[in-house]
Image (tube, rainbow, N blue to C red; front, side):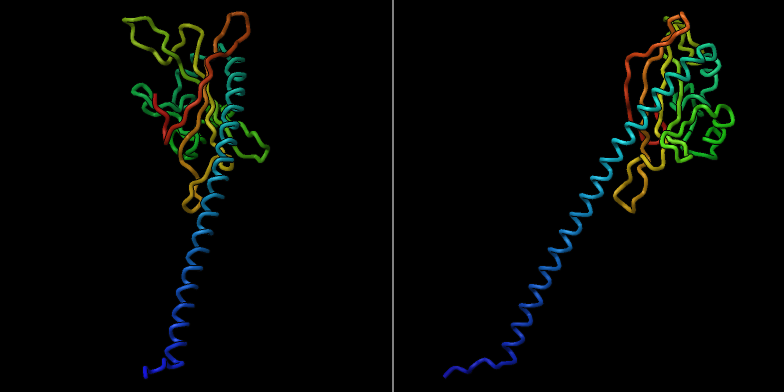
Length: 211
């Protein structure tokens, strides 16, 4: 006669099976929770991307109005790119940095020069957009481009969303996404005391924007 299995070995096999099942269930629960967390982060980021786009586009309308009303100061603005132009280029090696408060060309220095370049869109007392202006290519060859002077009554105006609440956040540790979002458009002065815009465009960049 074959020996009958003891009750102790039976209980051991049952316990091992229960442990395996619990492990599998815990793995499934952890996977579901991780997926749900990633989906929530993705949904929040998508929502904030839309908010940031709206933030920049609202700022562009403000930029059109501000620089349109001050056509007589265009060359003054263009001559001070460290205040009015955040686009880095070989001719603008010290661009405005509106998202860095204490930098030499940062927010505090810009506000000291022209506080109207910042706007609070949601009334929370914090700056949401930075308005800027830069020249277009308006010199005829063989003349070199002079980015500090307007020759054709047209400039590029734009707005950069610098809001701390409207920009999306990364999935790791909820840190703010460092990429910049700016929207630009052509502003043309018609000589009759009015200005109009056309050719709107948008763009993103990490760190400084580049020409």
